[in-house]
Image (tube, rainbow, N blue to C red; front, side, top):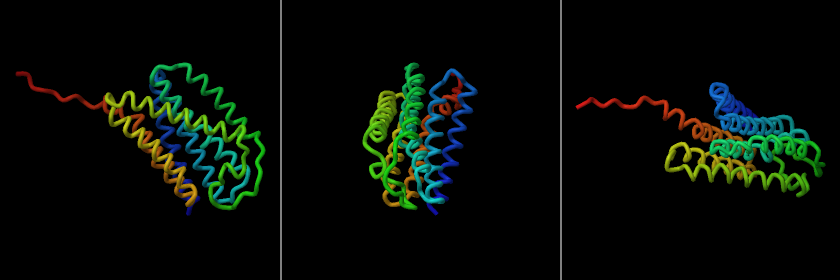
Length: 218
């Protein structure tokens, strides 16, 4: 059951990432859409890794994919999108360099300890603190901080969109906290977080696209 829930979350999140990618292709002047699409894609890969681990039994391969996508890439890429939204164009190249570093670390670091067949493995049971776990902590803190600070700074101008984004970040964090009671909890958190984040990312465009009311001239 956990594998099916995680697989459904992966499909939903990947679909939302694709919709953001399509919006970027339609408007190349908005690089934040590409970064957000990449962040949700990483989120979808993390959910797919949960489905893999729960269906086939967790091992080093499934754990590396899960850790790279979920712990090392998702939050920094989403934070990069928020920085690009505010005009910080240098965030894009920095994110590309970081993504390469993160994938390299996830692939190269040694793993230790035996994996249980079910239940998301705890990073501290299989990874040393340096460099992988420290990198994940720093990347998640900075990425989440970028998303939340940008959302709060523009909250008065876009209360609905930013409220949804903050709720999405909270749902993602809650999902991570539920990992101890089953993989399905994390998968549900990923799905809810992805939906809220997507709604927040596209809400300004949708609201601006609504027809303005016409008032009769007096």
